[in-house]
Image (cartoon, rainbow, N blue to C red; front, side, top):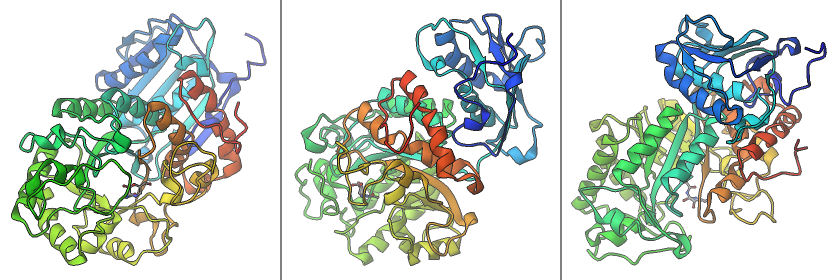
Length: 500
Ligand code: IFG
C-alpha cells in the first residue's frame, strides 16, 4: 500500500452533524473487501442487518452478519453495552483502523447513530444501488459523539398534499442520515384528512378526497400508517401524528355535518387560506369526535406523543379555545399519551409533560416563557429559521415566504437555546424542521426544500453549541453533495456553498 494513502472524500472531521470529538488518522484507513464481515451480538442484529443492506448494493459483497466472537475475518464490529456513560442513549464511539471498524454504544439506537456517521466515511458511491467496481476505503480515525438535544425532528405536512407511504419512507431514510429521531406527520387540515378513523369512516373517505389546488387526495389506512410507523422505528425514528384542532378542521367538517354548529357539512376547500375553520365548541358531539380520534390514533401510535394542533384558531374565541382544551387535554393521558401542540396551546395551561412547539419568528413570547417556567419543554421551530417551506430566495420556484426568505446560512446560524428571550437550554426539548406542502407536490419538491436546510437543523439539534461555525459547516456541507447526488436526491445547490 502506498505510504501516502489516497485523499478520501470525507474524514471523521467532515461528519454532519459535527461530532463532539473526532480525530482523523489517515494512516488508519480501513478497506472493506469481499471477505469482510459485519460482526454483531444478538441485540445489535437489527442495526447490523440495516448496515449490511446499506453496503451490499454498491459493493456487491456478501458482507455476512456473524456472531461477535467470530474473530476470524476483518470487518465491522457492532459492540453493544457498557460504553462510556457520557454517550447516553443515542451516543456512540466509532473507531476506524487498518484492521477493522468498531462501533460501540450503550443501545441499538446509539449504534444506529454510529452507522450514520460511518456511512459518511465511505466513498459517496457507496450510496448507489448498483455494483460499482472500485476500492471501498473508509477514512481512518476515532469519533466520540452524543447529542445536545433529545428531540431532533422533521415535520411533513401530508394534508395539503398527500404523499404515498413509499414517499414518506423515502423521506424517513433521508432524514435518518442526519440522526433526526422524530417524524411529526401533519395528518389533518382544512384541505385533507389523511388517516382512517374506523368510528368516523367519512373522515378519510370524504376528507381524504381533496388536496390543495384540486390535486389528487388520498389517505393512509390504519394498516398503512402502522407500516410507516414500523418503518420509521426501524430507523430509530419515532412518529408523532398530528390532528390539528380546533382550527384547520374544514376537511373533517366537510365530511360530517354534525361537526358544524348548524349541522350541515361545509364545502370542501382546496385553497391555501388559513384560520377560517373551527370545530363547534359548544356541541357535545365535538368531544366524542375528538376522543374517538385520539383513542384510535393512540392505539396505532407506539410513540409517547400525540400532537393536537392548536395553531391559527382565528375562528375560535379565546374563551372557547380554553374550553376546548380544558375538555381535550385530559383525554390524552387516558390513552397513555403526552401532548404535543403548536405553542398557542401554552395559554391553556397544559400538563407540564406537554411539548409546545414554538413556530413564530418573534424572539419573545410571554405565554411560552410562562409555560417553560411551569415546566414545559419547548420545541423550537421558528418559521424564519426552521420552516423548510420558506423559499430560499425570490427565485425559488416553490415554497412560501410569509416568514421571509430562508437561505442555507439563515437555517444554520441560530441557536434553539438562545432564540427566545427568557428561555434557558434545559427548557428546550430540541429543534424540529416543518415542511408545509401547500406548494409541494412531489418527492423531488420535498428534497429541493428540505436539503440542504434539514442537515443544518439536524446539526443544530445534535452538535455542541461550541461547534457552531458557518465557515466550518459550509465546507462540510459541500462534501455531503456527492452523497445526495449518489442517492438521487434533488437538493438545492445553494450559491452559499462550494459544492464538491
Ligand atoms: N402557518 C400554518 C401552517 C402552514 C404554514 C405555511 C403553522 C403552525 C403557515 N400553521 O405554521 O398550516 O400553512 O408556512
